[in-house]
Image (cartoon, rainbow, N blue to C red; front, side):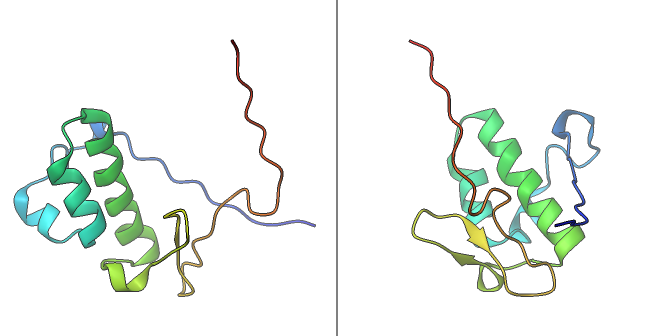
Length: 98
């Protein structure tokens, strides 16, 4: 089976949009805006901001109503973006060292 996959990356430290203005944060889907505002960890704030920017820019998703969250909180969309988990149906390969 062959599939075309596009990967998008957002580097907060290289972005002119970091840190975002309050106006930009207000335009995030509520889940990501709340996560950005309430967390203290800089990496999680960057992840929330990057997720919101990429969802809006590449999939046109700008509100929580456009996303569905599964039992474990993973986002999905049946809209034009067809956002799905990349590893769906594949076995997990987590390796732990003790």
